[in-house]
Image (cartoon, rainbow, N blue to C red; front, side):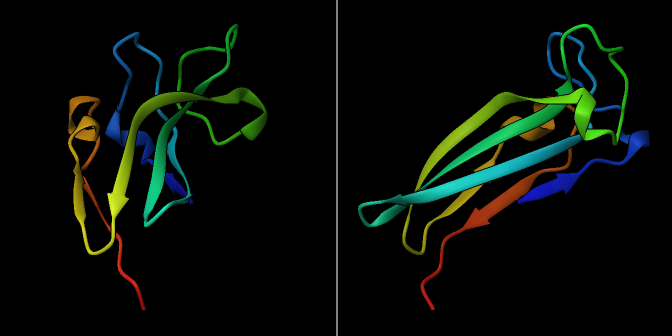
Length: 93
């Protein structure tokens, strides 16, 4: 799942790289789901500015969670890098 960041958000990693989006990747681990959260930032050698060009972007680790069934996780790392909060909830249907 990719979430785009508004250019006006001015979200940045601690090293100053501009964040253009967030990518969530997940898979099952036993009775839970492992979720990795990455910031989409400019590749090395690219200007540290917002871009929608996937060829200029790479992933940077933000957080990882092991989420159990019916558990809700608040991704508190996102507000620290200038982004809106995100809540992830795992439900069985």
